[in-house]
Length: 558
Image (cartoon, rainbow, N blue to C red):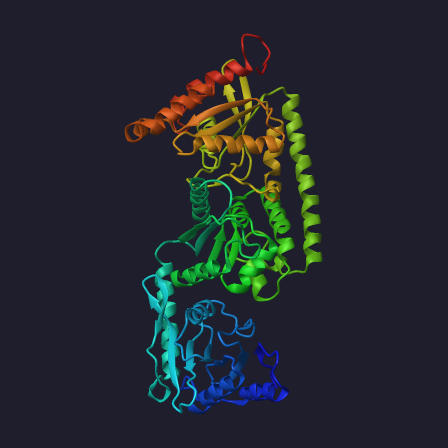
């Protein structure tokens, strides 16, 4: 016989046996609960002074018997009834309320989080033969999913044909979810979450705006955003557990398929949040890795990304079954592939070792090519800067090449190298590199290996800045901070303020912002260009010639 779940402490063997006998009961599939079973639940609940609940499948069989306390009960993990892509779980909860109270907020939370077919509260009233009940169920609305609450009524007056009602409701929910998903071309839909105790509110909002752009780049539709700045971070959920439940309910209501955190989550935090919801849970690092996997085109880039992904995922592969499946696949699981990620930890470590050997061989090939360039005495320039600042566009315009560009973060991942010719048979090697981003975790730096090698050999760093970005000064600082962390802070640098073609419009709309840009450009000893307009690059070309070829015959870098 199946065992009862929950709060069994202090119960006699005979009482536990009475609870387990509930598994023998069957409800006619057309009814939500038979009168005899409801009466037995109320009787047992009154005797034990504890809430009692049963989870019943659509065939009318009792799948779980749950015992709580006077105030509520905790539903166990429903491993035998995974939600998957279905709109509803296939189980309905029938439980008692000892204080004659109606359906509670906790009840509605369970209904939404677990996607139950139906929820029924049986109201216990001592000394009365009549049983009252209240029903609640999920209902489609314009945002995705809401809840409907029936009024309290005598049990015999509730006329609900479950055989027809539940499948029709499920079809309506699936239709509503499909309607919401078609609002844009995004493959997945997410709620964005930021929980931080450091920095200002403005900094948190700026970071959230960047997370929104990362989501857009990964083709994820951001349905809603939550920013919380508590005094202390919750070690299990970052935010408080109650707030986390509210966010999950909101995500279910909006038809989201995942939660994306702006902060890097520990393996324990991912497990705790995943235990609360079947939504996919990823963090900023995993989202960036997904974008890297999308952008990597060369063998070198693909190997780097797969290696970085496996190193990131290895400590997080402690869950099993549903939890593990939610960590892989789709957004956050692109690149290595589901078959690799479902192997055991030893095989993943073997794969990491194999990729590291392959990457070492590729690195040796790059090293040989760089030595040949150095031997030829050709100066080397690396274009660096914040992501989406216009680096690839500048390379294309300077060299008349066709490196992939797009108004997305990390549009460039693979390193691109071109020759830039000057008068009098002079030339330089110019390399486009992957863009940087704030709070880049050190665990992701492995995906920048080729970029870092190119920058270490560079004679000059062209630091491209999006002059129209409202936080361009912060982006300059972020890039320089990362360069310092990579021991590249002493490299000669030339700041290139990009998008000069938009500055006149900025001056009309926001004079203060325009003056900030102009003052910064003057004090930084920089050049201002429009990467799309070759004619505007003349000051940059002149400055490069001055730096590499002053009046002496041999190329010398100042």
